[in-house]
Length: 98
Length: 473
Image (tube, rainbow over all chains, first blue to last red; front, side):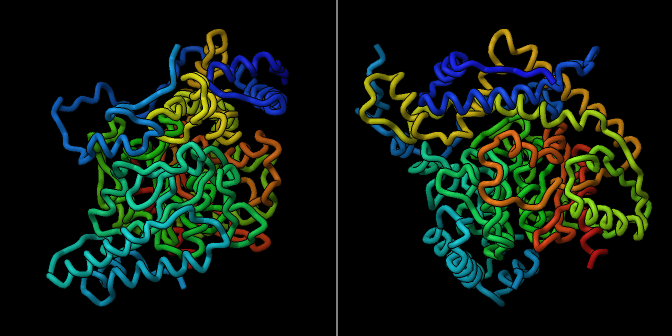
């Protein structure tokens, strides 16, 4: 089986893309894990799939429609804001963007 | 003492022969007595007691409550639920109070059921042992040195410990059936789309399903009957062809059951193999026709699964950013820092592992080689299922190649942990229904038998599992 080797730089790039912060030790650990997992899935490489389309979902449902009408969820905006780490003037408050 | 069958218990409550309050109190007492197994993350005690009192008062007034009158149950802690936090066993949702409830719980409550507690799981349902819970693992009721399976390990253990007549789980790649097998209970994964997932923490949207864990097939069937059906809040729900799942037929005569050849090759524990072979013999002795069948791509299912699922995970978990709800780092210096800090502190290492695998296989340059390839092999697998179901009514085999393993045994090697799902993931990729029922014991540890049926043949699936259960008595 072909071995896939993931570098520390690749792990760091994936971490940035995924908004994850990793320690040096974690980076090393994930290098080993991801290399092993991606090597395992190499068994798919030589599978003949000519003439087949990818499957995205299995229900066969297409264009599920519903009426565009107002529904009562019995939830007030204040209740939704209760879970927020920080609010101001009934709005979510976030850290500075630039 | 095992709880009486749910339908009988509910009738007794409705007739006023026992009270809903006494059932809820009994359940809460058993939960408390077994706290050491850590199957439970939180109690919905106050709300449960109040609901029980209300139901008892309505019964005195002569009202009809429903098919689950007064029945206590436990929900896996990834179901949004009133009365306690919904944490998904993660730090990032540790203090999250659901502002609305999942459709599944609403439907059960509408028939009189009462949620009493939230069960432990692998954080965000990522795992096969419940060891990935941010709040510590659940112990197997048959041997506290061992895992209960996962990710619905708390649900499986809670039913095995008789805390409740049934518990809810979610199954993305075996997360209901594996704990059912390891804990010696019934675990049902319905056809994809049969039960609404509205209000359940999403893991991999193309394979996630909701289902019950119970002590008897008929109990699981009744719960499915109540929960299933179209939901305008979940556009992936399908229409049901039959709805009377709890009317079960004990009949094995002439049923054609395919034994999956690939599930009896290397890697299967010899005791598990022996027990499964003798249970297949029981099916045959009682009139079923046993046929060996081959699903060549089933050996590729796990590799497909560990591409497709992390891909969907990486997308579904991007919403946890610590801004609108969940854990947040107060001292973050800017927005990006606050995202990264919340996710660093809030996710378990398995969550991060899957997010990164998913991000990798979806990256430009790798997308075709990994994600698209896996989705196409998935088509091949589905075609093999369709073809084999032209020849047989059911497929049968072990739920897992082993019995419950020791705590800590596989935690250092994620790939080895993933192999616990090798016999369960195919049903999720194909969207077909599957059930695990307890059929034997090896060195005190339970062994589960798995049946699979064609898409939407959930009733037939429950029939065959029920037939086995009755013929094994």
